[in-house]
Length: 163
Image (cartoon, rainbow, N blue to C red; front, side, top):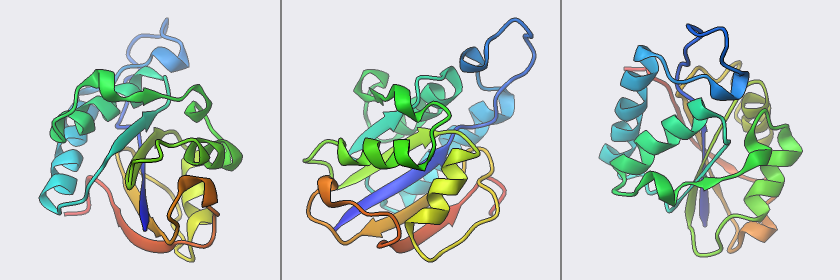
């Protein structure tokens, strides 16, 4: 059994108009929500063996908060260029290439693709993945190379305002 956690990046800042989309940092709310959501997963004993992130600054920063909560360094995050503004096929290709030894992976990416992919994973449907939300499924597979969208068991959906 494998576990996939999809994490939409935390809230980003639009304060500097000269920043490109990929350069936008987290805003104060994002810097508060990311460690809180990571702590929720740790408290629920949800394992994460590998952190795979879009190279966008807001996604990498969110992934770094989660990695830190799991005792990892930012250098342990696997940067996956294809997760930047990814479509469902890009998510699937990323999962096929996930570290074989990892039982649970977290993918940090962006809307609208991450919501579309979440809705393709199981019978569960969500309208929208808010910033810093986590959508998780359990996959009845022994290897990431056998992953198939639609054939997974919904595990949970959580987001910052879901107290």
